[in-house]
Structures are given as C-alpha cells and as structure tokens.
Length: 139
Image (tube, rainbow, N blue to C red; front, side):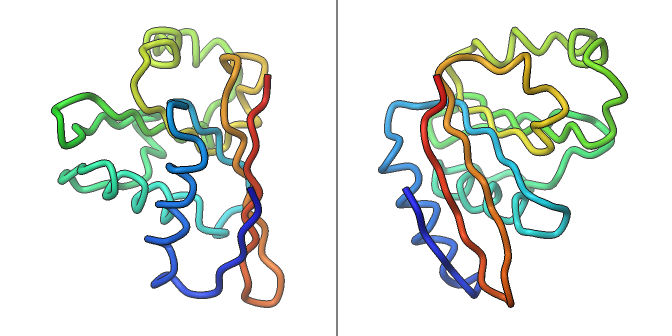
C-alpha cells in the first residue's frame, strides 16, 4: 500500500485505508524520522478503533495501554529512549507483542530483532510538505 497526504484532515482516510488493507493484522511497526507524523497517525488509528482515551506518545513510559470500542487493549509503544534490547525484555515485550491485540510501535528500529512475524511495516517520509506512507507485510 502506498499513499501520499499533505494535511492532517486527510488522516482519517489514510488510517481507514491502512486498517482495511491489513484487516486481521494486529502489529503495526512505524518507521520514520522525528516529526514526520507517526504519533499523529497512531492517534487516528486508535480513534478509528474506538479508543476514547487520550492517545499520546509514551516516550517516557515506553508503553501506553488504551481500550478499543470492545474494551480490548490497544498498545502503543515508543522506543525512542531505549538504550538497549534488555529494556524491552524488562517491560515484558512478549506479553504485548504476542497478545493478539493491536500494537503500534514507534522508533521500531531500536527493537527490530524482537518483532513478531508477520507484522505490518509502515514507513512515513516527508518531501516538501507531502507525507508518503508505504506499508507492507514483513514475514
């Protein structure tokens, strides 16, 4: 899946298309530079899943847990401050990653060896104000 967008008012369509395209997938690993819009897109994905909690980047907590419209957990990770893989082990990443609940990860490159298979790899880049999203399943 490839999609380009310029404005945040296009995010509902982008998030909807992403969830439709990868229906049945629960693990979405986001890649992209700081400020490219990973958290903003994750906020919209959570909104579309019926999350009513305040969705924000868990930069210091590493993981935030929300509830979707059915009361199921949705996990949002930010690995930006992770110093090494041992910290992922310390938070018990396996319990989250293999839970069959939605998991959205930011700064995923820091924990790439730990990713479950398959997962949806979402890369966001920016060029002159236009964001480009590329998503595919990684085995």
